[in-house]
Amino acid sequence: MKTLYLDVTAGCAGDMLLGALYRLCPDWDGFLAAMNALPLDGIAVRPEPVTDHGLEGVHMAVSFHGAEEGPDGPHGHDHHGHHPHHAHRKLANVVALIRGLPLPEAVLDDACAVYGLVAGAEARAHNTTPGEVHFHEVGTNDAIADIVGVSLLLHTLAPDGVTATQVAVGGGTVRCAHGELPVPAPATAALLEGLPTIHGPADRELCTPTGAALLRHFVTRWAPFPADGGTVGRGMGTRRFETHCNAVTARLITE
Image (tube, rainbow, N blue to C red):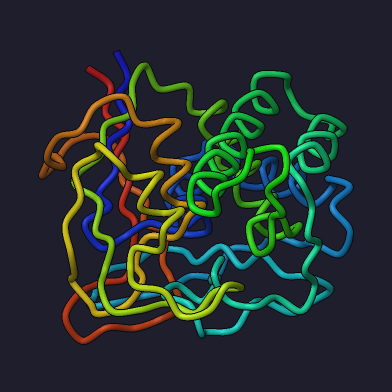
């Protein structure tokens, strides 16, 4: 039996989870080739080695026409910041785009399901229907690449179950398309409803809507992170904190 464990006590964003799973992938070159061949206009995915608090990992840089998102967000890939390449897509547009990608059907099913969760949460937050939600940050091609990439890596790793720790949400406020909102923002709070969460360890948004939706869809059990065993991958954010390593850590254990 193969179990994937996720340590999200420092928060979770799509690019951080992407980096953690990438490090566990048995074929790094094959994964990058598949992602960079996708017909997502202007998007490129590349791994960058990072050391934070003495721990080594990888930051998965998802760039749009050569430019990565700035450090305004908690991880250097903020799904709440204002993107210059907003698509303002609806759920049907995103699903159609994903369904047209040359990837296994199971991967496309997972990616579409994650977007369905985001649409439902946004609809609750803004008192509308999932079909009428206009995706801003989460509908851009780089966010789609994060979600599709995580879905592809989990399909490749094929764990029998995914276990995660409590999710750190952070604190303070966050800028988004609808103004300044307390952390967690309404859509993120809806996605995390009923899941084990903790505040901190920094006074910033540490769990993005994309990260919350990926956890909600893929995690099957919530428990402490094992201290040893298996293989380990860390997905790093670009922001640095004095108090902790800004990473999602993944451990794949075969029993």
